[in-house]
View 1 (cartoon, rainbow, N blue to C red):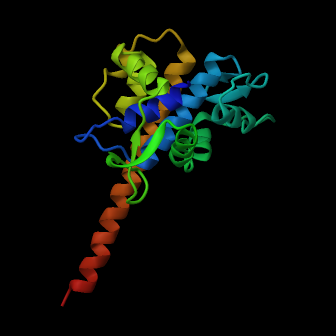
View 2 (cartoon, rainbow, N blue to C red; view 1 turned 45 degrees about the vertical axis):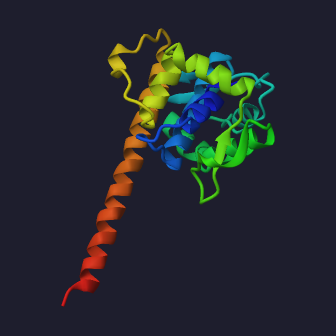
View 3 (cartoon, one colour; view 1 turned 60 degrees about the horizontal axis):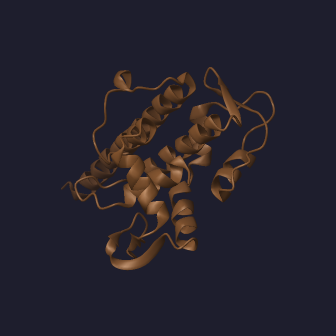
Length: 201
């Protein structure tokens, strides 16, 4: 299992007070993949630029795809640009992958990020591992979950992280999610203003 899959599972676990948006989750999943690639020494950061190293040896298909998608020529891609590029529809890709592995099933009682059809978590080793990591307050998973609103997390300055690169990625994921929310709010205001024009006498 990877941090991204664990994050997806935690976001899918029943959290009725904290619905998770597909776009927010996709950005956070891209950040989680990058953190795992840093941990596997597949990439390093030079400031906020992603410097690729060797290929990923992970047996996880999606993490392998993330490694293959890295920009390997100078100028290297910035973390923010990676999040927006890799994150496009990434939550849907994780849903499909977990369904293919039998870790998500179609059901009436689950949650759905996409459309009306509901999915629910199967009782699987993946679910137990994600919950174990969650209950252990693993700091990276907790920080990513807090960014997408699963629960409130500790302030960034209180995170017990020794890895400066991971801290950089988490901060940029947080900024990207805030930027996405600002775009949503702006579109909502513009839509409301347009509707008011048509309602005006």
